Image (cartoon, rainbow, N blue to C red; front, side, top):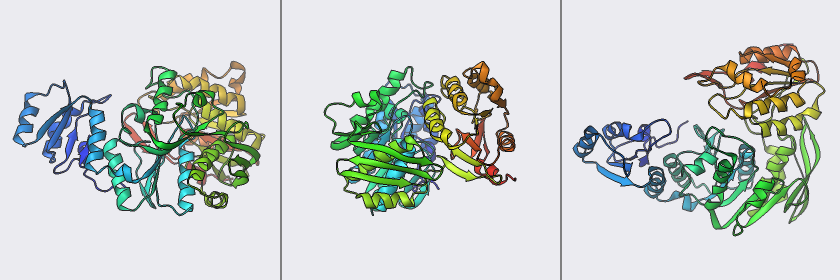
Length: 475
């Protein structure tokens, strides 16, 4: 479902322009927003915002005059979009407690966990993230991990109308870089971890990290930041003036965890917190990386005086995150796991968690096209270290050739491990082929796509459901 209203008071997309809208022409990475001004005027825009120095063709200048629209020039169209959208909607973020979560991995699970805990504690909540957007129990389409400012402030306004108290949202590095969150202040924030990703967008890992650290600029003076003390880079770069709590599985944080059990039945752990030591368990979570997400969620939940008993009740009811360690019993006694892991660090976390659960592990994965080519051989190397069999296949190749992506992954797999690798560029065929290799107790892991139910090939998104395929398998 799309967010209502369809038309925004301020927007950078003509789909959301209505009578009286302000249209902000963004100079994009692929397209020039000023080329859509005529369309915006035809749809009813009464104010046009462009960056200083933008040369408008005579036909556009004349059209602005003919439509009695106002032309406004600003130093930064992206910053103006955020400021104008916030103002037009009455600064709705000011009435909400907003919790922002950044990090290379773990953002989505942490967001789902924390929002679920808050909801179980009786608060009215909303969620913004990779998998879905939601206000109370109404779900909406999630085109971006962190939405554009025009959508974002319309979303916050809708939250206010419906009495929402807390918004839990993922703060992607790109969103922080391009000013989507300029007019948002977090009541609390979480930095889960940091590792290589998005080299297609950032010129170096240092630039990527700096983008993540912009999170701190959006924390209220009375706000709290929770950071992972086991990630040295994250731990040592928190500004001194920021109030923080630290989480650790190594025993040197404000909130420390110790795994008691991690198997296909779920996760059980002890938590040492400033309020005492507690045991928590969750059937929907698995592995040490999930324990970090849980620790971060508990640290924020306790800021709002949510008691251990309520947190455990929430974990008992937690259904997990679509596409994150989703387990399916197969007809022949094997188990399949679907997960979104698609980076070297998430591969390492995932495989290290599931490897002890089976003596026979088959991995199916590819890598997304038009995204971070540097990670592909690294993913291959990690998979080769842990898996008994590997089937390389497609994973949203987009404009790239699937064969080229697979070749890049293969470069990271040592020659003496290549015997365990098969290539099948038809992902459904790869899944069915892998199933024929399983037996009772085998673990079949499908990585990369998570909850995404399509294949993005060239300019087309083709419906594709891994869950649907698994359900058709026969012993």
